[in-house]
Image (cartoon, rainbow, N blue to C red):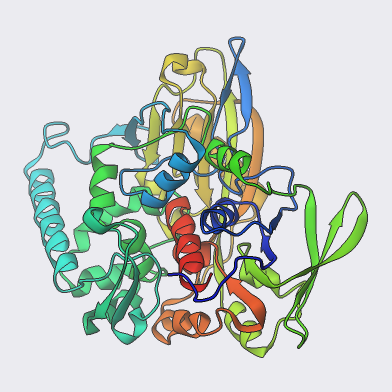
Amino acid sequence: MERAGNDHKERICIIGGGPAGVSAAMYLQKKGYHQVEIYEKLNKVGGKAWSPRFEVNGESRAYEMGAIMGAKTYYAVHELERFAGIDHDGPEMRRMYRNADGQEIFPFDPQKEFSLGKLAGLLRMKSQMKKLVKIMDTKYKGYDLYGHVGVAKGRYSGLSKEESRALHRVSGVNPNLKDLALPFDEFCRKNGVEDVQKIWIAPFTSFGYGFFDEIPAAYVMKYLDTTTAIEFIAMRLWTWKDGTQSIYEAVNRKLENPVHLNTEVVKVERPDDGKVYVTVRQDGTERTEVFDRLIITTPLDHFLTYADADEDEHTLFTKIRHEEYVDFLATFRPNDGPTISGYIFDNMTPERRGHAMVYYHRWKDLTDNCPCSVYALRNHAGDEDVPYDETIRKMTDDMAICGFPLQKRLIEQETYYCPHVTPEDYAAGWYDRLDALQGRRGTYYAGEILSFGDMEDTCASSRDIVGRFF
């Protein structure tokens, strides 16, 4: 893992103070690097792990506008917790289900709304779930590593998610892994497990990661490997009292060189002298800093707008796609809001894009006076995007249909979400071509696109980059 002869005196720049950037700095510090600078253009660390505070009944509490939860398989996040001296101490997760008409439904309870057809469907789903667990462990051995290097060539190479050897590097050959380039719905049909999509859709599509007919199966199954999926089903989930953002704030406080906030990188130049020149804008003034190496944790397609990107970077980064995920935090009329989180299954289809798919009720003790976060996807490959304002209107109407008319939207936003490549580009070896660029011109690529857009895979990809190249 350690490069021979490395004296750790290099000066390293990290662009981005989100989970990938903060965790990269932590791993560098643990390896003995002391000259690490992190530049973040916003006034906060944590990126999409954003947990603003609001006062209800005279008490200030954290609410979530991005990442919400973790699980026992969040090994990299747990390393950050240990480094920062914190724990997952937040409220328990609770949920129920609704249809597009706002009525409560019971899709996974055979005793509620009983029918022979429903019972048969649940038994078929259970059987297919068992089949999926088996084939992923056998036919697709190696599927659940962090990252995508080698998959398109029928190989696996990366950090393990297996509990007994979590975050240890493993590798091997398995030609069947090429199937993971297929769209997830096609992958399921190929393996006769179509019904498992009804289980996977809630923690995938409603969480903003796209629709199953457009996203390669690799993204779905690496994020929701069968162990993690079972933890989601059983609701054995982690949350943090002060929100997911508090993880990265706590890590940042332990860094020798904390994140430079309100500092935007406006230019990156990498001439032939082996140095990296980074121009930043802070407090209205610009300055250029000189580094030995650069780690990019922000969107790689955005890197093209301010850096001296070469032809290979242009070719790869222009192929990146992302989801347009909209959410707002809302209050409701006094004593008239939700009392538990809700999934609206009918709205998790491309035809219903722009509609509310899930709302998150965070604090059980606040009952029907708890502000809730509401989420929607407004894009789908091959279809027109639903305009932002129309999406907000649809989401607002959906909450009223469920019986919860909004009083006020405290915050609303759209985020650059879940960067990925198409099934065709995945199959063509996009990730192997990107990996071949690592270290060239003193530059290393990290962040969401390297593995997946959740905070665990993002932090693990930073661990992998630091472990392999520093």
